[in-house]
Length: 167
Image (cartoon, rainbow, N blue to C red; front, side, top):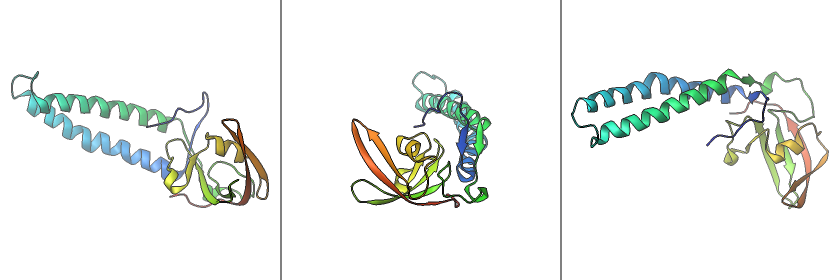
């Protein structure tokens, strides 16, 4: 699954996220695709293609790989890498910040604001276009912000803002 970027925006991404996309693209182009092409060519030589499972699966997998290669290539072309470790020290929240907040129900949570291709909620990585990130961005450590979702408003206190490497 991948999220759409807002129209006419850059694809902000952390160095680690950029490297993961680049590695996936390399693996698809130089490893997985050539292996599948080899299987398809072998299967095509086995006669009737209409009932040849290796051939049919291989062709379908090739289409999926080619679609993913096109997607990754486009994403990387518009990528704007933002390294949190190179950012000037500030207590204001921007892309690539690691933020500790106090949620309205009393739970402390640490989140990292990352690119749309880096989301991993189990690791606290949220997209910079998510509703939570949108209310946090440009706020400062110590501020209280209000997240409105489905007619409900949650009060969120910003406890700390750091700029550190995001794995």
